[in-house]
Length: 148
Length: 371
Image 1 (cartoon, rainbow over the protein chains, first blue to last red):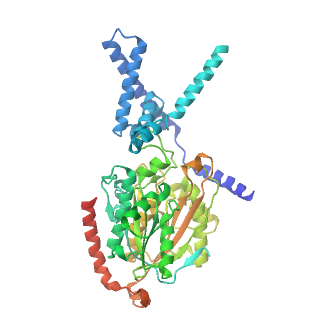
Image 2 (cartoon, rainbow over the protein chains, first blue to last red; image 1 turned 90 degrees about the horizontal axis):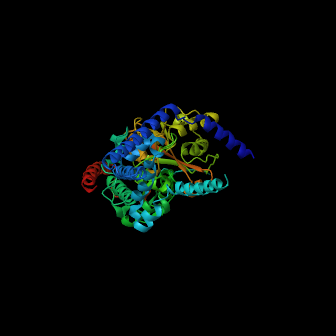
């Protein structure tokens, strides 16, 4: 019991000493990076709709997403995206670029363990939870939607 | 007793340190024996690079001391990778009897302490004690892939690329190992793996307290007290904890993790890893001791003994700290030193000195072509 008391008071003391992340600068950086990524996406969307007017909007969206995903993978490989991510925080994580980075970075990292045990096994170590939660969430929403 | 006092027979002949490019740019850059330009060391994987780094460190320390690999009785050391592979694979190349240790980032003082005990009791003549870490291999084992665009929490630390080794010998030299205190495993209930400084500070406090009590000394008796890798936050906590025990850590205290990086680098709380205290000991501290600038030094390497599995299962982080006390021996005192006839070296200390200098130059030249 004595140890528990000591640990609680030590944890409280450490919590008080922790350096705080400043919210406003982080929010601004995230807004800026996220905004730029979205603006680039919109730019590709506009370019594709200009050059391929016969395509449906959903098809143009798919093309735009593919382009953005490719660019992120490419920048990840060049070692640029992690710098953007470290600066921009959630701004680079929330758009689809974050998802692309979270799949391509373990693939690069674990390539050395081989294609099967390295790339294939480790590819979804970070993105896996997002996929699982997304699928489970959509099932729940689907069931709820049935009764509304 | 927790503290083991040496019987004036364990010396540090010399030390060798080797670090990565980022550490080389830091404030201690000029003190390191060798700074690698490319942190892959031209190897395919970072694990292989870490191994090569450690091999170069060990052979560098042996060369610098003017000894041969055949003169070494044991290689004592460890590293941070699972199953301490870097040390084991290095020992395979060295073909030396190997005692592998793991105390996380406190491995340097642990191996140095055990080496000193073996040498002091005439169980061995020369032992090489060393450890090293690599940022990229530690990162993939403990954290995330390198290229992942995530943000590090402000309390996180940066595992250093680099390490050091020293030769513990019964040949009298300028640096004497006076005592070693093996620490208790102490856990104050910190569960945040990104705040290891706070988890290890209580262990450091306990070990320093025990060492001072057992040696019957005062904190002011030391020219320099260094902790391994508590980082900025951890060392602040340590100062507070020591104050609580009525021990004031003054200007003679510094943390190796804080010393190794420039404030401008994005390393947050500072450096960490087994190589952190190893590289600072074998560069800055040993050089200052050899100069006679420091007369008495206490090095307290600190380690966090968790694994990724235990922390994911919600366990708290146990900390450990081992302390080693080093003393400068003035050259005139050396003549009065009695050397047991059984272990008396062929060369006297006077002869070793010029040899030592030559070895340093040739080593650094050779390393440049090697790496």
